[in-house]
Image (cartoon, rainbow, N blue to C red; front, side):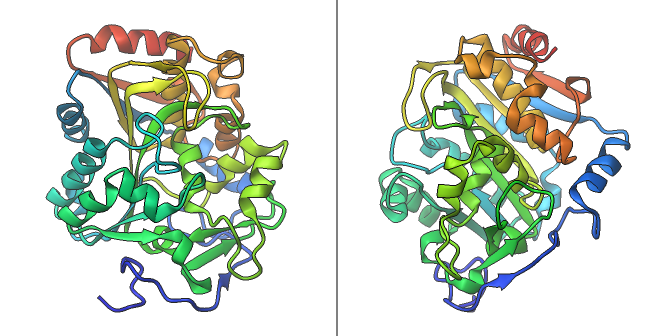
Length: 343
């Protein structure tokens, strides 16, 4: 691979490409946020979310991914986003078996090359990846590792959506923009620093630069100090796309988070392609096990992250548009409870 290939481990340090409109794959070209949302919500739309009840993480992940057509990954370059915000063990961070099984399934579908693209908010990224076993897994599977802290100016794409709550937009790592497919595996947990919960929508924050490489502006300081934090989180997914989402709910934090909290064991693997639907199911599960007042309050689709994502047309607009697929012993009863929580 050439040095400037977006899936090469070492990225060049060049000029930052900036945009003033929404350009990336999966968007309705030329439309504003509100126009895109209206066009999306006026079209018939349902999505499936698979819920595997299991005591075996690896088999559960395999069962979940078997419910999706992975043939579309054949020959595709794939950017992988996991959850390595810190070096704290699962459910704070992606479980090693989850990362290995998830990426192996994508490779088995004929995808390649793959790049694990990460930035840690609570620690040094290479050290976090090493501690959590991600470096060894990537080496074993011949997956490139892109450490976002090492990226240069031209290795980000800056978006400045006019209708967002970001003061000056944000920079998204180029591998997520240029990959044929973008996949992620997230954890199931609350967030004590203003996000309320950190599932697939919040996991996309890790695809955004901490500092603007052009002038060192601190995007994460803006995000975490904003009274509109949950709206800012959702707005990232107007350009960050999800071709497959795997949520590891074998265990969860129902308080605290993202690095520690009260731990419970739902014993589920959740998978889908719609971040709104997946996160709504995640919130439902957190409620089933008793969670924070912020996550428990009101209708799930009135939660800040989800509500803003719906306004932007990022995913389904209501619980009725989510088709829940139960898999495994006890899954039918579990899914029934999820549906009751969704309303």
